[in-house]
Length: 609
Image 1 (cartoon, helix red, strand yellow):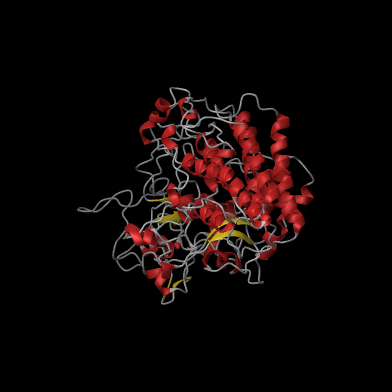
Image 2 (image 1 turned 90 degrees about the horizontal axis):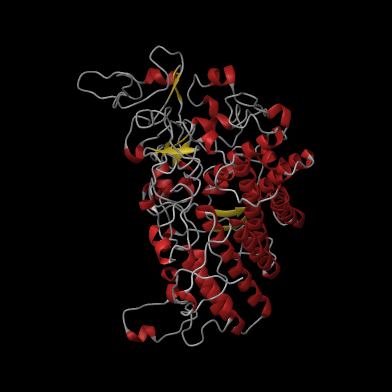
């Protein structure tokens, strides 16, 4: 298949890896760690060096609070929030916000590599490995485009200047996804089999994992957007085609499982193992992690996550919606009188003796270690400002390197890794595909057993865990799908997957529209007693409902004065009617007007922008 690309997004194949220096003698050198200019992609070493640019372009962690990056991505979902309201969730984006589609730069560079790699000399297994990496990265970048824009143009050849005078319409997302899966099949056939992540490069099981992710995404996107009749499913999609995607997701995950090369990380420390995976810099001996980014602050390769989260605030907070979704320790929904009673004492609802132990490894408990010289206070910093503040009273703990003083006090010194692919997601993909295909539910229990065993919780029991409350967003779904979605949410929180899960399930109408994210129980708990001149918040009191003369309201609660229970309601003044996400528009991003003009109108704007 050969299609045209916008000339704006074409770059020279070697542009992104040109080396530079301070004098001409430096430019004359051809060291082993640089790509040769005299024999472009003529050796396996040059193939490897060229591909390094795509690894460097993978997502990282944020450098500062409020920044973009994996650890804080869930602040754009129903899992976490910053102080600032997310424009997309609130339906406030406009066409003028549209950004350039930079992924085509990467795609052209991959296409250049694939074309030139035929000239490389060396060990054929190594050449195949690097070609497999190239197909993987082309699939990665096209998948990114599909998630952002839906239909795009498939370009799998290196176009010359004469070709660039012709423009084609956007291909159906089904065409794009099928092409992505085809690229991943090529990748799977070429890549080496590994039983660890020691090479820090893509291998066969990583490609299988991405295939499972892509196929599950598209199968559920088409199914649920068609069910809700949004403008975003493909008009010609059939149930058989949807099932074929879900089957591919199941089979790709199953192939990894049957390979028996990976395992859920567990040392028997039920209250530590899950968290430790995300704050350990070197994961080379972790049998769950299939591909990750290793940081080294000593070489200026670090981020700022631990510094900002180690205040117990970070200007971020987990939502009541997320915290409420964790089951009790004996595997039951956390609802009703049980929930209200336990929340009367701040922090009790997060204790591992009461709830799923992943919660206490994701949120900060009172007295939890935050730095080598400090522990969390008995109450959250909801009265602070800037990065010292917790927006909901449930501070994020998952990535805090609490034994590393430099990471928790200095900018750019965090070394917590970015995990791109881990075995837990493979098991979750497999379980969800089984549920969507209505296959034997005992296979779901078996697949997810290692996740429960790591935290010493009972196996999944669909009847025991089913949340039938009419207020629960997924109460109308089958008990199998509901259970798998909950397990995915609590296992993958703050790993950059939640927004796309909401979107592929077409669930913004249930989870986002008209909703306001809430925080801890305030009125009705012991925390309200700390808001006095002698209490914990004495240095910066919280004023809600009314404020004394000379003071302003700086805190918001649900309900009305006199109500027995009232929760933190941080967006109450700015979102009086909840998020204004438009389900007929905001599932996809707008296309930049300049893109439409440069393609002579062949590209059309996304629905309702």
